[in-house]
Image 1 (cartoon, one colour):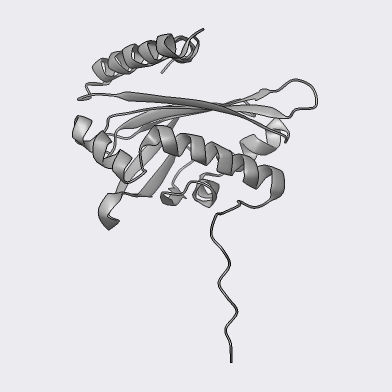
Image 2: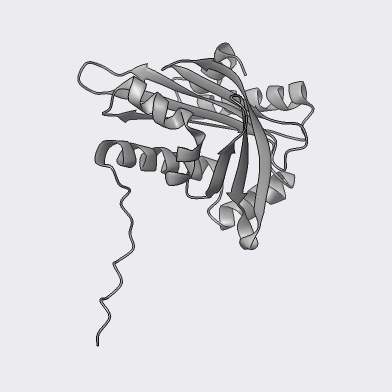
Length: 195
């Protein structure tokens, strides 16, 4: 996925136009890779932390399970490969190996799932300086071959695992973790045992 391809998919002056661009780019990516279909997710968040700090945290792939709700673990292999275990609906998990395809220190990480992955995917995370005093703009772009086509997307939505929803939540959780050191939850603390 080239920068030009991503820019075309995400740059637009109107939401409908952006959706059409994203659909077209996803179709193009599916054809390039020989996938059944593809869906494109792109989100940006501004985090009030230095770019180098955010990049270093993300580059240690084990950290991703700290804020990605459905990621059980990411185990680094060699410098370019990692193994992912992700929760799926109905108490199941999916696993794949991911290969780092591009890396520009403090700016960019791009990856693609290795052949034979349960969920074929590719993506990139970009780190750019925000306006002075605002920190860093972090943009995540992911393209994936939805399991089970349209039916798989519907089931995923029902279980709140749809990647567009998850991408927005996970970037917010990343922002909270990096700015405050913790992730807020809606859960109430357990009552103290009485005795």
